[in-house]
Image 1: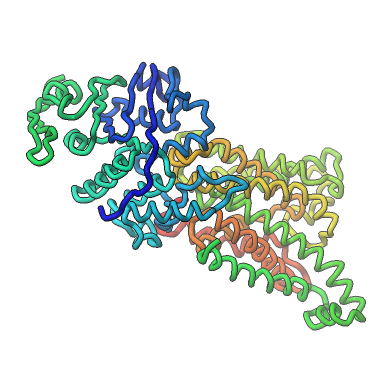
Image 2 (image 1 turned 180 degrees about the vertical axis):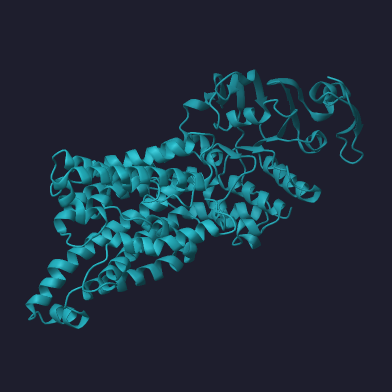
Length: 271
Length: 330
């Protein structure tokens, strides 16, 4: 990544307390207590339907807790005005959609919405933040291209640039690398690492366990709406954890360059 | 704001200027462009002065107001429904307003003093019914489904309007000129009556433009940006009801303007709602004026109803949008 993120974020303390979240009926996430380490990349992993996206949605205020709370620096997130919360927490949803013909720059400008109001329309601050976000995501040359003419990796970088322009201390990403090939995955994950290097608290739902181990500082492993294990990848990823999460027998090797765990699945175990 | 916006505002302003001139210059009667402008500069031709200042000028202003309301309402409704086909005339919003007015007159109100509020309530009811019908089974996400629900609702309300008119001769006489959609014979009193509803509707539309534009990135993203999607949609529907109700009260139901204007605006400035709204403010009046001038000239010395001309203009656009390889997502 040639771009740089000059802006330093302040450390944000994001915590859940006895959090229940769901979609009306039974909660999908139950009685969950977790602290997301500030200034680091946390990956939430687990099988389909384990509640990892639901948890991210609660952190992002997309889902309202049925019980318990999400606390940002000790304050209940549900009691913070949406616009104020959006200045602290940015979200890139899964399969984000944009209207046809929207340019990269126009998309990134949306990131300034929480900083604007009736009396405060577009300002030089906004223009500066958009330019820096475009530079950070290495998109200056593509700024005036419509999104639908970009590669998958470029498009995803544009979405992340929108969140960067939001200038939040917390960045939440829901499967930012799904549907991307290996090169494009790295392109996006390196940018995600840059976000944390600049002091942001980054939380990403990731599908692939080895990718999560390679790029995250902290792992939160979920199954059935609860946390099964959390900690540094090399400390928590074991054959036992893989079996518990996915019902798969696996060998866990060590990445010869990064020293992080690599999961080699062998066979599916009978449930 | 920027170069992209200028690309839409400049041609829209030009067309609007020419349309205003044409609206003052041409009529179904004998006062042609030469006499019209002569009357304005020298002031000796009393007939021409009357035609231009007492007949065409108020009519032009009403057409401008109606066009502005319908263009903006179309852009707002399309953004709220995330559907390029959402149009007040197609979705039963205008039909709801007309039905409400006709029922009110049949119940004893007078067309001259009725004011826009009955139409506004009818428009709001039509809007909610169409959206509700589209969502009755499964998702309301299919653009064509919403239009089908709206067409069914329009048909139903139109039939209801016809029944009332058939049963009640006095109402039929009072509203015959009105139910087809026309700005002929409207004066400044009409404008004063519907002005407040249109002004409030326009204000709400402009206030809700930013959150509404963020909805085009999906509800989750909009929330992440600090917006409240449900509140934005409710405000959008209130704005549409005020604008369409006011327009219908002034000119009767005029279809397709809310489809054509945002469609042209998007072609000029792209999908960003705030640019589309800015351009629609000029393009809406321009489209209605062009259609109104055409309504005076097509079958001279008679006038074709404005609603018929906009349908002639709008139907091809509807077909074009539906036939495009895939519907543009909003």
